[in-house]
Amino acid sequence: MKELIAVIITFFLVALIVIQNTPQETSQMLPKSPSFSLEDVASLSVRLKDKPDLEAKRDGDKWLLANSGTPTYLNPLAIDQLLHDLQSMKVKRVASANPEQFSLFSVADHEVVLQDKAGKVLLDVFIGKPATDLTSTYIRLADEKLVITVDKVLTWQVRRTQDAWLNKELPQNP
Image 1: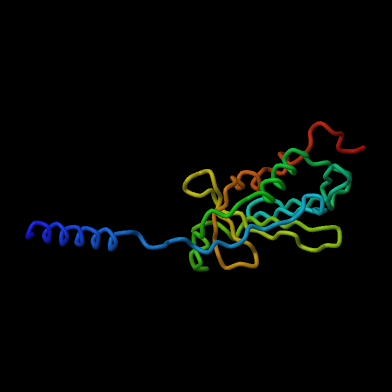
Image 2: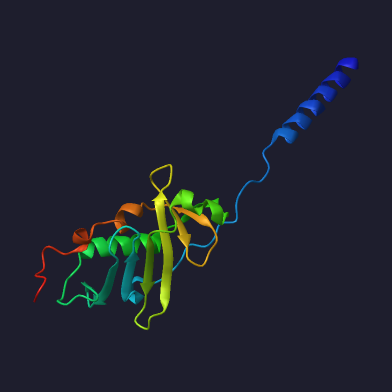
């Protein structure tokens, strides 16, 4: 009988230890991923701290450099890849909610703004540096006070040189 009581007490103590050491819920409330339709995007602005800004306007199925004296076409693959990645990016985690730490993630220097034909902003996002896993990017939505990581590599796309945005296959002065 003493052995049975000892087994029951031991079992109870083991169960208590396991329950105490079980991790508690640690999930974060993640902000929603931005959503917009690719067909609605009529203009694209890429504002960079250390390079000239890129202002582009949709012209049918092509993209033209805005404010250019002559029609200058942009590389459709570069534009399409950036737009698709921005549309399909998924939030992975919140990296910081402290504005004093935003500079650590470089989420103030490189801004991308998408607008529709009426000038309504579809997306206004600051693209930061690549996250530590190198398969995601730190971003900050302009109207949010959070730095988040998304599942796309966006940094190199927005930091292209001005020449890398141009379409080499189309004549630039039709």
